[in-house]
Image 1: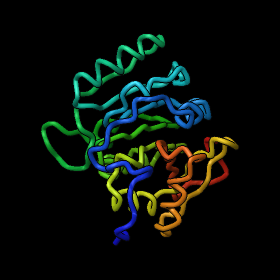
Image 2 (image 1 turned 90 degrees about the vertical axis):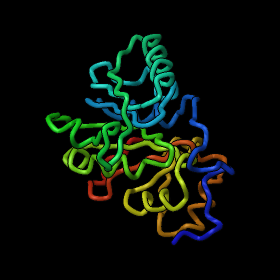
Image 3 (image 1 turned 180 degrees about the vertical axis):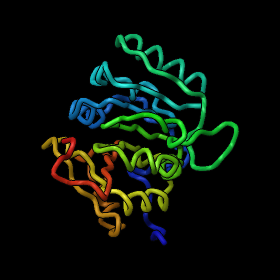
Length: 213
C-alpha cells in the first residue's frame, strides 16, 4: 500500500488533473531517438503530442473519445504537415462498446519500434495492460506518461512494473527512479530540474543497452 503522504508531482490533483497542453522537450527527444514506425497517442494528448519530430513514415494513431480534443490535435498536426488516424475510443483492458484494446487494434501490425504517449486521466495502467501482447513483441518500445494524471497508487504500480525515468533538463539525460522507494520517488518528482510532466517508461524485460536519451 502506498504511503498516505505520496502524491502526484507539484501538488497536482492526480486523476482528473488538467491535461498538459504544452510541448515537452522530453517527448521531442524520445521522438528523435529512433526511426519509429508507430507513434501512438492514448487518452488526451492534445497539442503537446504534435511535434515536428514525429517521423513522417511512422503510422501515427490517436485514441481519444473527446471530439474537440481530436479536432484540435488534427488541426495542429496539419499545420506541421502531418497526418494521423483518429479513433473515438477509450483504450482499456475492459470490454465495452466504446473501448478498444491495443492488442486487438494492432493485432496484425508488424511494427518493430513504437513510441507511445499515454495521458489517460488515471487509466495508463489499464491502457498498457490492454496491449500486453502487442507491446511485448516490440523489439524497441518507449512509453511516455504524465505522472500528474495518475492517482498515486496506480503510478506506483507502473513504477514498479516498468523501468521509470525522468529527464534531467540540465544534463539532457535520463535519471532512473525506483518504484519500490516511494519517499525517494516523491522527492525526485518534486525536483525542479527533472521534467515531471513526462515520465519515460522502458520495459523491464528488455536490454538496457539502449535508452532514448
